[in-house]
Length: 352
Length: 140
Image (cartoon, rainbow over all chains, first blue to last red; front, side):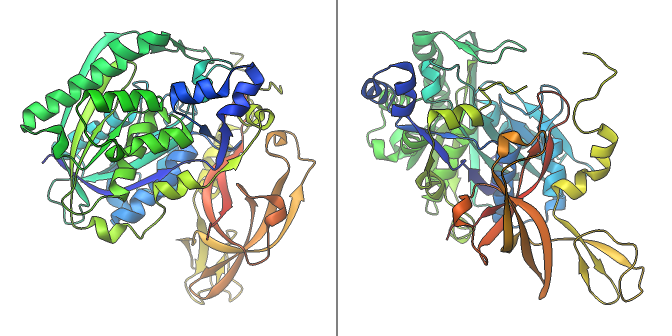
């Protein structure tokens, strides 16, 4: 056991755009899109929302569920590929708004395409185990960008989740992270250059050598080290660029029961949260967990790498479930908007 | 970048105001317990001992107005609602003014429960992004 999860919180904006609405604008076949990606709609941030505001909502809930004195939080690490500023940390904005104690507080913005959130978790675990901090906040959130008419436009969504982490054996633990394994190679499947408004991707190249290769390797490494079979886990959360990739990776890893993969419903209704994707998945798995359950989660970040986590749920999970909002409540609220409103909210229309 | 012009809020002003814009801060007279939403040097009871407190996040809408012709810089968010929100601070009713977000304008009602969150107040293409407290409906 390397660290405890004391509290968690997720957030997904209320606005949604359906695949049909996007397909209509670009003259594409919506059924082909929906079957190809297994995504029906995606979340859209409101005009006044960004990665910092999403992270704030998630963090508030995580702190509330943790039930700790928030002045003991010693780190605010935010993983995203859509930080509000190119230079100026998101964590300082959050720390101030959350009312954290500025003394002995560390804050940093993390970046590793879609796995910046799980990197932030690992960095906080490292600080805790080094004895530099007692509690830390690790967040993954994004308001993802997809070039208009690109296949990514159907999935690039907004959402995030936050975790209050503490030392192993903490009395407030709702779950323990028992092991983390990472796997990283230089694979140029997806990138965005400085100043470029939208990312570029290698279409099919994003699958086999990137998503599948890295997730399968990190998960196999984790299972090997723990000497465990994948079907011993009760729930699974994978990075979800689309539903099809998640379903395929689950099958290839030998998961027998796909209903245990909690990420599938999230990506089908709300799309890909990028750095928030795996973290919202873990939050949904915790929402559904009972004491003693085991959760396996694996992120994927383009460029490329994957972090696999093995999490064991503790008794206190039953106490925190009534606090705050479940991921399913966010999934089930939806205010559908048309493409024009979407374009306005996302700043696609140039006004100045 | 042309260093002579700073777009948006002037950084020293942002730094002075950030706590009161982003956090949920109020003030309380240590002597009579009266709570204020705006900072004061002196309470109505005459005391100068005033402490800063964290205000509750939840409140109720008392009344609202809808801004359809926004000032410059707020066009993106219009039409939006500004409301008077009543907070219950240990039994004391304190009224605050604030913008509502994520709300259907025709569904705002007196007594509607709202919760404070962090949102962008104004942001240009350059310059500082101004964050601040907005209130969103609590879904029952």
